[in-house]
Image (cartoon, rainbow, N blue to C red; front, side, top):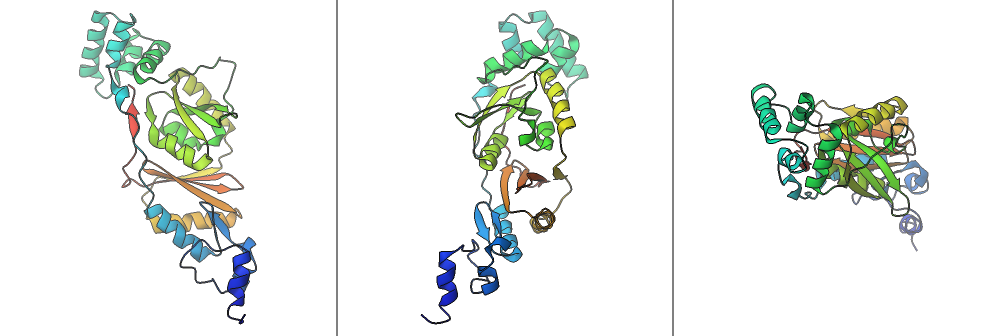
Amino acid sequence: MTLSELPIRLLSKGRRCGNQHCKHALDWTQMLRPDRGIEFQGQWLCSEDCFSSVMEDAISTIPEPVPGPVSSRGMPLGLVLLSRGYLTHTQLNQALQYQQSRRPAKRIGDVLKELGVANDRQITRALAERSGCPVFTLQPSESSSCGECLPLHFLEVYRMLPVHFSPGTRTLFLGFTERVSYALLYAVEQMLGIHAEPCLIESSLYERQYEIARNRSSNAQIVIETAITISEAVRLVLNYARQLQTASVRVASCGEYLWLRLTPTGFDIVIRFPQRQFDTHTPVI
């Protein structure tokens, strides 16, 4: 065996850089110090250069989420409430007229609550019947312990809460108040390596639990809403990875957002890319 072959032989017994175009393949200092590298999506990368290159390629080619079911549009909410006996024909017609003339931007469920002809629980159950999703309930004295497993920003944007985790099946139930985001469900599965299921929760439950989650939040996240390029996003992530002595980075697409999690700190970076308009929502109101 020649000296030129030695680094490759030694490297084959250790960790190989996940960058196919790695310029450090024969660099002894990189090869003999694998602890200096960082993992991205489960691949070990030997240097910041390799990390930046692989991450930029990955973000540029992240596939679109699988579309969710569309059957939940179904019967209009007002007719479901009417069929359940929660409304009369007169009340429904008055609500529709009020919505058209004074609250065109509001959903019919919010209009009905504003007029006092339907309550939160009735609307949630009607939505559950129409969408085929179960209703999840918590007593006022109870609280969900799952709120910190997702970025607080997603709880606000999607009006959603992680409400229950089943260890046996590794299933996390996400409770939505307005519409189910299948892009978010897919992102949670990719990021956390678990199964995510949607359910519906009452708006009052969401508001109460969101405040609890917000007060408990350790603020271990940063949200970038201003327009940045993918290259700028990579430099931003790399800078935080240095500061936090990050061992691993994972990324998942969630509609127009990219969600990155740095471990072992669990620090979340949420970056909005308006041009990535491939979120899939199923309206429920």
